[in-house]
Length: 204
Image 1 (cartoon, helix red, strand yellow):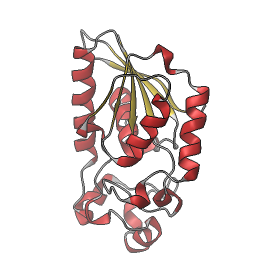
Image 2 (image 1 turned 180 degrees about the vertical axis):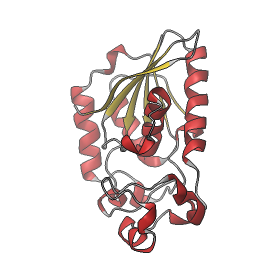
Image 3 (image 1 turned 135 degrees about the vertical axis):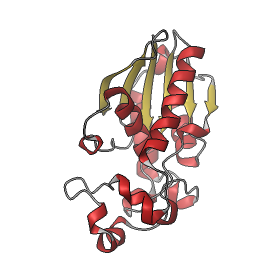
Image 4 (image 1 turned 90 degrees about the horizontal axis):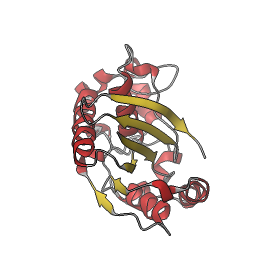
């Protein structure tokens, strides 16, 4: 059984401004002081001595988070493009407030998150495309490391996609994105590649 401990990166300036970061990789999307402190708090309270390796998204905010978490552990660290955030296309860099005014029908009124049809006007990445690349990553790592415990450092929508793949909820919108530096645990069976969600959005 392969165990995946999936961490969302720490807070960024864009997070505080409610900006869609997507695949943007500029200073506004790097960890702010709060984000660095969040990552340090997780490091101090989530003992990673059990883990065999760490794999992160190659965007700077996840690389920064991974570096803080890995301090003192020196786990083998690599980066995988399949772990990057969803690309919101034309919406990347825009505020949610403005987008909600322009496209109110494309936002869930309870959680404030976008519906899958957002991808049409935004020319962004479709939800199932993210879930497909995350599934391919999970299955490949399970086959490559069938008995390992792997720490993943990724992004809100991408972490959510790990959970959606495992649970396959009837309504994917029922699973909101996790909080910054929360931990989600998925296990995957090497023989069947069946995935199981053990916990979601856990804070330390």
